[in-house]
Image (cartoon, rainbow, N blue to C red; front, top):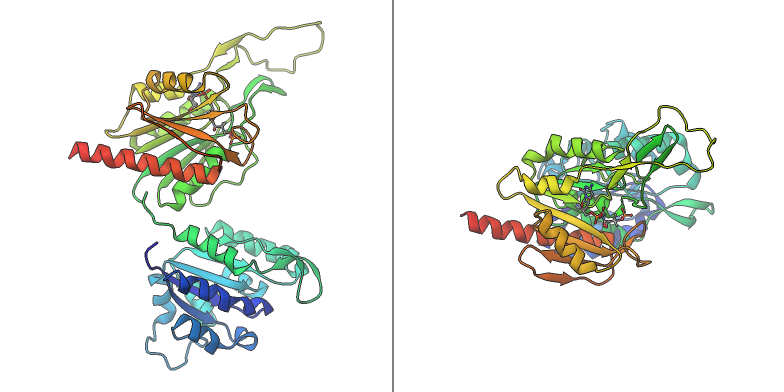
Length: 403
Ligand code: PMT
C-alpha cells in the first residue's frame, strides 16, 4: 500500500493509553500520521508521546501557536482517513450534531475523508439510547463505527465499551485505505434468494443468505466502485456507500436489473434466482381441505441469459455464479457458454463449509477462454476480493484490445 495520510483524533477516555501503539503500527507500515487531541485527552496521555511516535506536531488547541492557522480545515480535507479513537460519548454526541467547539470537532465537521469512529466508554453510557441514536446518525452519514469490545472496563463495570485492540483498529483502517482500483466503475451485484409466492402466507425460496453477494458489493464499494446491489430478502445489513434495491421475486429482480443494466461496466450475478414460480399465486390463503394438492410451476425468466444475449455497453463484463451439486465443472462450463459470460464462479453447494449460508466458500473461476482457476477455502470477503481482481484483469485486457 502506498503512503497514506492518516489523522488520529484522541478524545478524553482512559483507553487513550492504547493510542501510542496504534500510531506505531501505522508508522511502521510507512504512513504519515498526524494526531489531534481534545483537552481532556491530554489528561490521560501526554501529547509529547504521540508527537515523538508520529514524528509530527500534535494539535491540542485551536488557537495555539500554529504554522498553519487553517489546519482545522486542511487536515481533514487532505487526509485519506480520519480515525477517532477512543471516541467518548460526549465526542460522539458533538459529532452527531455538528458541534465544532475545539480543534478536533471542527476538523471532523470540515473533513471530506472517510471516518472511522471507535467508541470506548462505560457500558451504560454506550447502551444509553441517546448515545445509540447518535451512533446511528453518524453511521447513516457514512461514518464507519467500530463495535467496542466487551469485558471488564476500567470503571470496574462489565459489558460493551472497551476500545478494540490497536491491531484490530489498524486492520479496519487498512481495509478502508485499500487502493481504490475500481474507482470510476459502475458495478451491479445481485444477491440473496428470490421468493415466489404461493398465496399471501406461503412461498417457494432457497437457502441463499445473501452473504456472498453482499461481500462482493461491500468489497467493490471499498475499492472505489459505484455499486448497485439488487437483493432478495436477507437478514444482512447493507454495506455502506452502495445503492440498495430490494426485491422479492425473480420477475422483480429482472425488472430492477434491466432498469439499471445499460450503463454498468460489470454485472456480477451471485443471487440464487428461483428457476420456477407457482403458475398462480392465490389471492387468499389456501385452505387445508384436500388430502393432497399440486402446485403448477412455470419457468422464471433467466435474467443472466437475457443479459448475456444483449450486452448493453461495449466492454461490459458479465459474471455468473453456478451453484452445483454434481458434474460441477462440466455444468458450470456449459452455463458459461450458454449464458455468454466472461467468467463463471462455481461452488459445490453440497459442501458444509461452502455455498449457502456460511461465511466461507470454496470456488473455482472459469473464464471465457477455458482457463480454470481453483481457489482454496476462503472467507466470502476474500473470495470477493479475488473475484474483483480477476474482473479488473479482464477489463484491463479488454481495454488493451479496444485501443
Ligand atoms: O447467499 P449465500 O448464502 O452467501 O450463498 C451463496 C450462493 C451459493 C447463493 C452463491 O455462491 C451462488 O452460487 N449463487 C448462484 C446461485 C444460482 O442460482 O446458481 P444457478 O447455477 O442456479 O444459476 C446460474 C446463474 O444464473 C447465477 O448467476 C444466477 O444468478 C443466474 N440465474 C439463474 C436463474 C435465473 N432464473 N436467472 C438467473 O439470472
